[in-house]
Length: 175
Image (cartoon, rainbow, N blue to C red; front, side, top):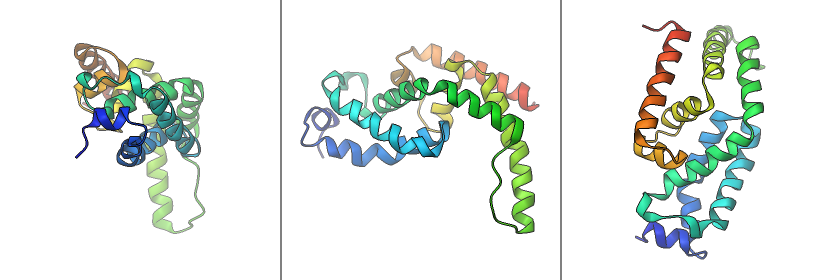
């Protein structure tokens, strides 16, 4: 197996990084933003990573949180549309589908209510709290990986996550 630092630094072997992490990064972006931009932002994430591969420091950890950090920064650039999307979903719920089956309709109505409440709760979080909670929930990153991805201390990750969970629980009426 090729060490990650060698793979990142070596332009000939950077494809291994792409092959290993692309789908995961695309899914993370797709959960945070519209799926229509996830493909483009995921590709941009890897383009930036390739161009900045000399900046990757293997002493700071694996390449995975580094890529999540790049993706999160790109998402930050699209933050206004992300907030608009959460606010719109909070008002209207998810878009209807064309499937007319009764059970699907019931499922969609229940999902719409849940998505609407969750979207409103996520929109009410600060950017830092939202980034941390979504990196943990969507990306499955550990505290250490979130800290590396966002360039913040582990204690900051823990406090933001704690505040975000408390706010979400309050907003969603969970005790």
